[in-house]
Length: 114
Length: 113
Image (cartoon, rainbow over all chains, first blue to last red; front, side, top):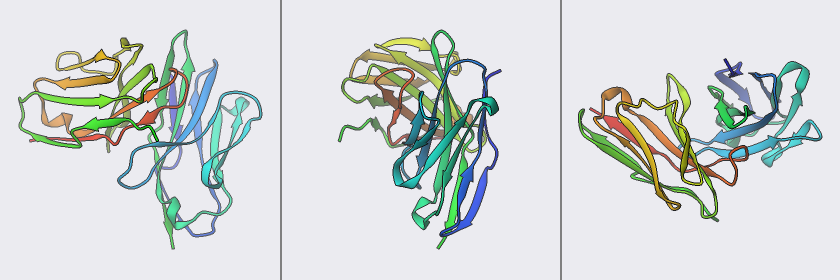
């Protein structure tokens, strides 16, 4: 069955530390890839997305993600986190199965210590 | 700045009661999604519509849940009868296309006692 795995459920970092959140999916066909962020008490909003082209995509607030097709991965990175990055991060994959189906990962809660 | 709106934001009800949640998608978006978020299950897709037609509701318990789009500006999710296990945050999202970015509403926090 198709699935999206986020390896870390909770991550705690100090400010200025580098961040990498893993995301892997299980589907061999065409995909669109997304990272969403949910700040405390707020709704989910788009951080970045990949449809095609350059596999390294840049999003808002200094985030970037790299699509590695051979590894079925779309990891999220940020060189230096800030306290305001404390949030929950969701990887999502839209599968082209004839129709389109979006699957969200379980989410990673990031806490950044000031 | 166009946004998805949801009402009510919070709902507390007793087991067995009917619950109706409403969503107004962003004008011009032709795809609407309903999700349920719990600590245990994370974010689950319940149903989605394109051009007001239901495309997939396989994630929804059919015996008690129903989702409709009476018109392009309103999507509803009903639970009848509600059960304590339905307690969750229910999000509506809309998008310009099924495979594109989804814009989420603020959610309805449902508590069933």
